[in-house]
Length: 381
Image (cartoon, rainbow, N blue to C red):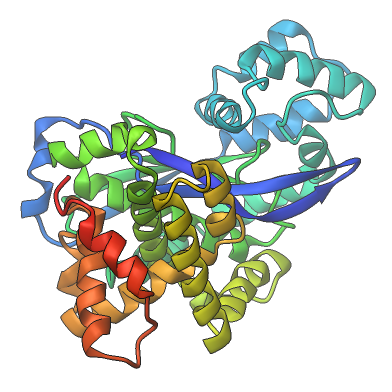
C-alpha cells in the first residue's frame, strides 16, 4: 500500500517554521514469490533481523561542516542509499526540493550558512552535527541490545510474516523523523538523527514505530488486492483513505507504545507526552468526536483530503483513535487478531470495532453517522 508521511509534531528552525513528519500507512510492493507465502510462516519476532547503516548520517554530518563543497562532491552524496532516500522523501512534500536542488543547496549552505530554498533541513544538520556523530557512536555500541529490545516490543502485536532482514538507515536532513519509501524493493526504514536532540532512547522509540510499518508492509505484500489498494491509495475515496491511515498508524502506535520506552530525554519525552495527552478520558472523547466530524465532512465532500489529513494526523490525534480500537480488539480476540489484519480491507477493522463497541458501552464510541458511513462502504478491497 502507498505510504504517505504525515506530521508528527512541529519544530522550530531559525527563521521559519517546519512540520516534523513521520510515516503513515503502508508502502506495499510486489516482492518475490517467496514473500507471497509469508502468511503461512510463524509470527514475527526472533525471525526478524535488523541491519543498521549509519553512512548517510555520517556523510551528511561531515559534508555540512566543510568550508566548501564542489558540485561533484555534493552530487556524490546522492549515491548513498540513505541520502538519496531522504532527498526523495523530501520531494514528496516539497516538490521544489529536487535532487538537483539538494546539490545546489548543499553547495550554497556550506559557503554561506544561510538556509537555502529547499526543505532539506540543512541548518539543523549543521547545528546538530556533533549530536548526530555522538548518536551514531552510541547506537553502534548498543546494536545487539537494541535489536533485542525493539523486536521484543513488537512481537506482541506483530502480523504474521516469514523471516526477514530489515535494513535501518540512519539519515540526517529532510522533513521526516522517520519514513518508508513508496514502492521500495527492499524491506527498509529510514530514521533521521538531527531531530533527536541527541536522545538515543527517542531514536529507539521512533525506530520501533517505523519498524512496525515495515512489518505491516511485509505481511500484506503477498496479497495482490492489498498491494493494488495501496498503489492506488491516492485515488481511493477519501473516507477509505481515512480508515486505512487510521488503521495503519493506530496499530503502529499500539505496538510501539511510547509509555513503555526507556529514558527521560527530550526526544523520547516528546513521544511519551503525546500518549499521555491523548489517552486521557477527555483526550479520547475529543479524538473520537473529531474523527466523527472529519469523516462526515469527507463523506459529504465538504473538505479536501489534504485538509482532513492535517486535522486528523497533523498532531497525531487519529493515531490514538486507531490505537484504542486496536487495543480493544486485541484484548478481546488475542494477539492472533493481528496475524491477518493487514491482508484484510481496513473497513473490516472498523466493522469489527463497531460490533465490539456496540456490545460494550464502556469503550469509546463513534457517532451514529460514522456507523452509517462505514456500514455503507464496501467491505471488500
